[in-house]
Image (cartoon, rainbow, N blue to C red; front, side, top):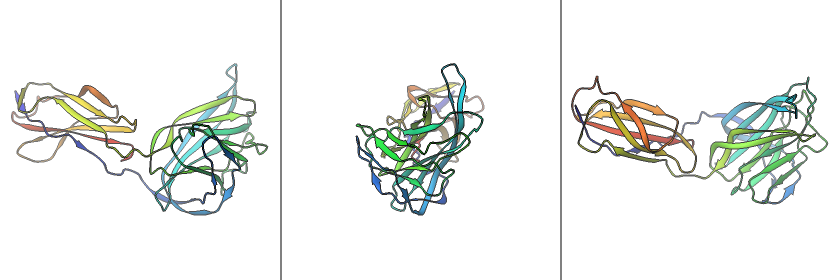
Amino acid sequence: MLNKTLNLASLAWASAFAVSLCATSAFAVIVAPGASGVAVPSASYPATVIRDTNIPFEIRGTFGELLSSGVLRDRVARTATGDLSFERAIVSTQGIYNGIIRSLDHARYAGSITDVSYATSTFGTPRPQTASRSADGAAVTFDFGTDLVLPGRGSAWMQNLTNARFFRLSGSATIRLSTGQSVTLTGLAEPTNDTTPPEVIITSPGALGCNCNPVTITGTANDPDGTFQQYTVEYQPVSGGAWSTITTSTSPVVSGTLATWNTAAIPQGYYFIRVNACNVLG
């Protein structure tokens, strides 16, 4: 049998973003909730890219026929002031299909100040002519007007500079054709000003309890703000030494099983148990 003592749960709060330098834009057109404006080109200045991901998409018709296929690039850049710019571009579309892209909707911007523009250095020549925002401020729509994204072409970067300092990967974007068909992509970057750490609780085993193999470790590792990334359960002999991993998971747990610890090869004694949880903010 094993006797184990309970250590206080600790929180991981270190930044985990890989960075590189790029050039993003100076912004000029502030779009308030319920308002619209003319998307304008802007000059470039140094910024740091903290996310840059390609997301493939397909748009199909009523009978499942493929109308448009391509790649949406989802990028986040941090400005010199620390604010985040959320930047997207249609990198490419397949020229063999006849779908013509009319607009791109960016969701989940409620609560953020949003300046919109497009970059002068682009993947293709089509640029948005207007930008509008829903009454609740959540959706920002870039409309290409008469400068449509034709098959085989890409678009300019569409940029939303916000007052957010962090982001999470629960945003979405809708690519819409001139004929009305559309596709919504999820798992994109969205602004958040969540600065609270995840919630971590160990409910069992209790302190100084006697436990037999296997040991079920229960509790909570979750982020109520929806920015949870992962948790790790570890143990350490009370005499000291390195912490050893029991399990790591990317699924949040609320009042449930965090890990099942196989202690068959662990010497009898007292051990600390801890849970480290982190979210997408670091």
